[in-house]
Length: 171
Image (cartoon, helix red, strand yellow):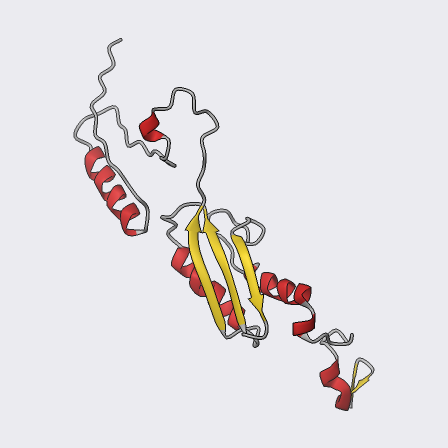
């Protein structure tokens, strides 16, 4: 039998495209392409792009001999609501490659530095995000929303602080 002009007894020596197969341990670029190709299938539901093109994959380390892939998955926020799904999808997709048995993923989050440090209190220099809960009316649940938001962000891995204030504007 023949497949694309290749006899079946030599089929194992060729890739599916009909070109000579390259032993993975001799082709680190091919391994990297395989790994990144699988990771491109993981799509961020908010940004509608894959995690590779978004630059979420850092410190990629591939060892064919140890059947291992390790990398840092750097998300936009430590409180990313889909970080567990990202982790599980990456592990599952990489193990589909066959030669990957061990997947080690370090989860991290980007730190955004403010471009304008002038006028910033020295106490806020290490603060990455500030979320304001506001309304022009009292008694609508601003404090309840703030407390629940802070609680959930903390449970998702973020370091949080909560400040309440009443601002009165005289016109």
